[in-house]
Length: 212
Image (cartoon, rainbow, N blue to C red; front, side, top):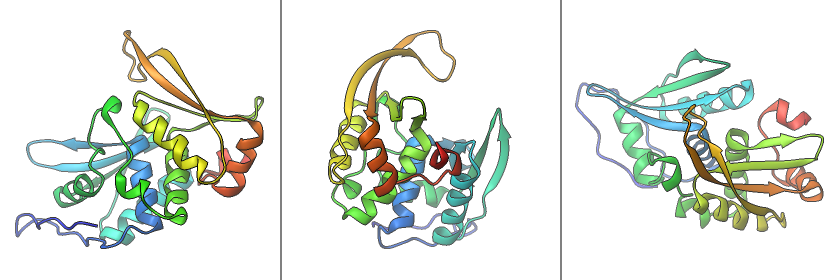
């Protein structure tokens, strides 16, 4: 992993991991799926929104273990938002996972993840599917929708490394932010037999999704 220059002398400095390990892979998956960068005049932060306890606890633990930061937690509709405030953290993640701060349609999975061994890819996929994936119990399928076709194509390729076959379909939906405009999305679907293989080989962090 690439280091970034420390900020102002009176700023809170972070520890900077030097290797892309399993925890770092999950963090990149969480942030790419359900996270965003918030920048104001006086602060910068990485934020992660989820409704399940296990991913929230995991995200918080990773931020503390890897970077030495304390998380702020606040309720947001039917979920919780975790806030990690640090200019250095934002710069570090943007340097190493360059598409994290992009708008949805322009997001991509980092080359660092795409070129990683299976143990790293597995943890990235677990976290990403915990953030963006939905389990359809009656149909015994797992689905992900994204405005980024690049992400869907890359996910499909990574899943094949675990012998998990998926399908892609173009759909048109209203944006999740409540806008009225219909937008183009891409849906990845893992069918029943391969969904079972996903559960065994990759799995979820969330207890709720595991039980589905």
